[in-house]
Length: 258
Image (cartoon, rainbow, N blue to C red):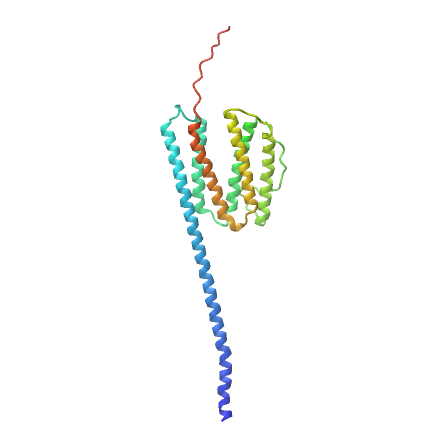
């Protein structure tokens, strides 16, 4: 009888490991499926968050545009209100900030740094032009050269290396601007403009502090903050249209010899 039971015992012994292996494989498959599903759900949630951010920023820009249009209607060119040059500058800013928000719709983890670099270089060039104007400097203090990646050119360097070179180059420019503004004194409207330029320099320096600690995973937060800051600045520029009265028509000068 013992010999008759032997084949069943052997078959059972072989079946148990096979069943265990099947169970293990099924569990692994379930885990993998769960991980893929969780990752897909997280990706979809992040996209929904970005869409909400874009919607909020779009509404802010729409309000800026409405505010600017009200200013133009209420104070047509040539009446009380901002000078033509300031109006044109603000109008350009309003157009550019709308474009910046629209670009968010096509900004991804792959192209965000290229766009961020380009935007910050444009900001730096704009600030430098203001520094030259208010300081009256024909030449700014020498800027230490650095081997940065040209704007718009793809880089094979790791993100951290490229980011560090970018930050270093802009900090050198900021140091140059500080040197140009150091001994500038002004009063009245020109003092207000000087303070505004200095504030923009400090703001860019603060932005570099934030970028200096950023990682590729922070791409959306960094991009959103930059565009949000831009909207803040344009909002203030539009609001200041009321604070910059057009100059009074000059009385013809008497050229009669005395």
